Image (cartoon, rainbow over all chains, first blue to last red):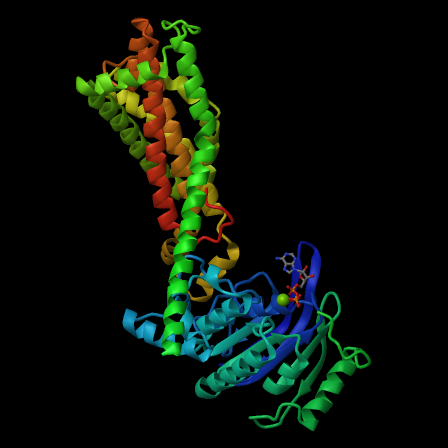
Length: 247
Length: 281
Ligand SMILES: Nc1ncnc2c1ncn2[C@@H]1O[C@H](COP(=O)(O)OP(=O)(O)OP(=O)(O)O)[C@@H](O)[C@H]1O
Ligand SMILES: [Mg+2]
C-alpha cells in the first residue's frame, strides 16, 4: 500500500510542532525519519496512523484521503505499552483474530523470532525493558501489517539484538512487501534499512533534506557507501565533527 | 565414588539451604506476629489484673475474661449465631445492592460522556449529604424492618464503589487505549478488553472501602431499632446496664469485619497478581 503526505502540519495549543511535511512512499518502500528530539517525528507517525486526526494537510493511504485508523496499519510505539494483566503470549496475540490455537501458534512463532520463546507465560512486570520492547515488536509484526509505522523500535536494545531484529524486520518486509516508515536516532540503522531517509530539523520541525539509498538489499553493514551516506547525514545535521546525534 | 558423595552432599546442602530459608521466613513471620501483638497482650493482662483488683468497677468496665465468658455464653445458648447471621446478612445484602447500583451508574457515567454530564453533578451533590441523614426518610418510607436497614447500608456502600469505579475508568492510560484502537477494536471490545481490566484495581479498592462503610452503617441501622443482630446487642447492653454485652458485641464486630475484609483482600490479590506494586496492603 502506498502512502502520501501533503503539507501535513500539527499545532498543539497554539504551538506548532511540525509544518509542511510532504512525502510519498510507494508500496514496499522503507522510509526513515531522522531528526533531533522534539522535532515532531512521533507526531508525524501518529498522524499517518490516524490515532491523531487533528492535523492540517492531507494524508492518503493507497490513493484514498482518510483520517481514520486503517485496518492494515501496524504501529510500534516508542514505549512498549504492554497490557500488564496479560501474559507475554496474550499480549502478542492481542490484535489477532481467529481460533485460539491458531493465534497461539502464530504468537509463539513470533516470540521465537524475537528470542523470547521461554518467556511466553511471564507477565510484563517480570520483563526487562528490552524484553518488553521485543514483546511489543512481536505484537505489531504478528498481524503482518501492510503499513508498518515504527517509532524508535530498537533503541532500547543492545547492538546485537538490534541487528537481529532489523533483519527480522527486513524478512517481514520481503515476505509481505509492507510499506514501512521508521523513526530512528540511529544513523547506521537508517542507512542499513531505508530506501529513503528524510531528515527533519527545527522547531517547528520541517523537512530539511531527503537522501535516497539505491543500494540493493541485503546491504553490508559498515560498507563504504553506507559510511559515505552517514557522513552526508551528519553533515546536514551539522554534527560531522562530534559524530554524535544528541537524543 | 568420591564424585557421587560430593554430589549427594551438595544435594543435601541445597535441600538444607532451602529448608533453612523457609525456616528463616517462617520465623520472620512469627516474629512479626509476636511483635505486633505484644502490646495488646500486655494491656489485656493489665486490664484483667486491674479489674480483678476492682480498680475499674465491674459495672463500668468488666474484665476481659468476663467479656470472653459473655461471648461463650451467647454461643452456648445459641443466640450468638442468630445475631451474627442477621447482621452479616444485612451487610452483605446492602453491599450487593449498593455495588449493583454503583456498577450500573458507574458504567454509564464512565462510558458515555452524556451520562456523565447528566448524572455526575447530581451524584456529587448527593455525596455531600451525610448518608445517615437519610435514615428518618427511609424509615418513614419503608418502616423499621429489613428494607430500610438494607437500603441504608446500600447507600453507604454505593459512594465509595461508584467514585472509585468512575475514577478508575477515567484514569485508564490513553496509551493503552491507543493500542486497542490501532488494532481496530470497536467500542465494546475497548471496554471489555482494555478499560475494564485496567480499572479493576481501582474498582476493588472501592469494594473494600465500601464493605468497610457497610459495617459502619449496619451499626447505625441496628441502633435505630432491631430485635436481633450485633447492633441490637449494643442497645441491649446499654439498657440492661451490662457493659460486658456491649464489649462482646464490639469485639464481634471487629472480628467479623476484619474477616470479610480479609476475604476481599484475598480476592484482590488473586485478581491483581499481575500488578507491579511495591507493597501489598
Ligand atoms: N499531545 C501533545 N500536546 C502538546 N504538545 C505535544 C504533544 N505531543 C507532542 N507535543 C509537542 O510536539 C513536539 C514534537 O513532539 P514529538 O513527540 O513528535 O517529538 P519527537 O520528534 O518524536 O521527539 P523524540 O525523538 O524525543 O521522541 C514537541 O515539542 C512536543 O512538546
Ligand atoms: Mg518520539
